[in-house]
Length: 516
Image 1 (cartoon, helix red, strand yellow):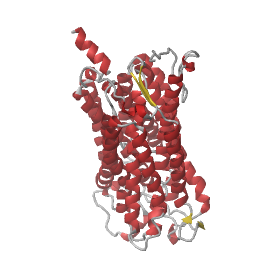
Image 2 (tube, rainbow, N blue to C red):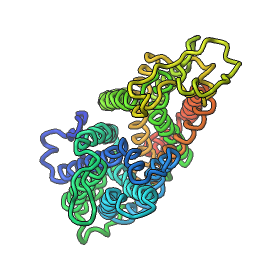
Image 3 (tube, one colour):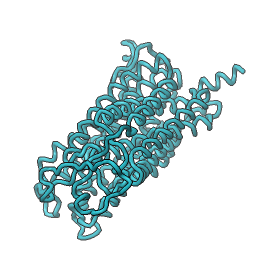
Image 4 (cartoon, rainbow, N blue to C red):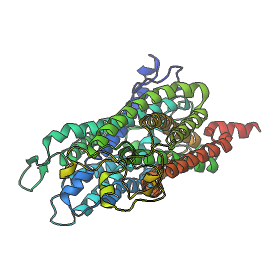
């Protein structure tokens, strides 16, 4: 019943790479149909995260005027914390039961959490805490990412895996692009919106994205329950099982001989933490950095950074396509090393140089009679933004409360854009290679728990990254913040170089052991 499924062709985006003869095989077609459902699940997970991310702050201010920016940080971090807790649990579940079960459960939690998010304005008190709980539950439901990646890793051969992981990362990037676009399209509804039923729920620019995410989640549940089938292949692509979630659910796979290298697993988790920490710092610092350095108003910063992030999303998709080809020629580890090196260059470019200083906020100068005497150059004051006098637009320039604004050279727009391009390209390459290499290190062993720990390490990085950069940047400035990031990336490169020979596929490692 099992047969070798192998091909010399590469896997195009969202298409299986079989020859015409292989495509006639029912198991093969069922396997790739199920893998595409995992692509779709990853896509919807990204959409569900980003579809509300740009409106969380105004929604929080609307439902609870006493909430401040520090509480916003907790609301944003709640998603990653929920995902960090859930990932190992869903991974463990998927190791012992058909993966349809944890997937359907997590998606159901996600649907309920998005509906809860749309209803947080209704309680008479404690609305901010309801929002915090809703975002934590959305993150908990997103813990299914570990199951999704472990499924794809177990359902692909070594030859197919890099392509499949790149396809999945491309779907994730598409979700990050489409989410904010859907939020923008739904903003025409306005803050008031229309009443739905008699319970007080209003369909507006804040609730409609969450309800749309819930609707997409219902569609995902139907696909998982009706179409997804369990498949597992070995490193050469031979089918080991194909479960249709009936009486065959109890089929157990023969345990592969040999142990997983714990040093390689730990190293992969540490490298992934570094990579996701970099991404969290990057997405957190972009808006405040651009407002401080280029004297952009709030609306300009949101618009311009949105355009930049959208462009980086398309750049990431192009990188995923290139990585599939390059990795087949040179291997996974050189691509990962190259990606980290590109990220290092990106943060190095962001270091402030020269003798030009940021424009200071006029309101700070006007309201402070004493300016730091250590600053010997003439003060550069940002012009007032249109509408700043009546409070409709925030102040422009670097706030005097950040003392480093007076003596740290400014970062130029060319530096900022160049760094965005470099960090975006390096992160995209490192992201897909991290998952690909990790899945190969685990080999034919059940990967649910291990993928859960990898996702948890990434979630931990996304929780700590914003806290780190917001404190270091505010107190010490971009020179310290980006110097520390350069040091962190350099440490990641050194770790990868030191343990380069340990980061090999499971089958390669045990073949070496037999040969010696």
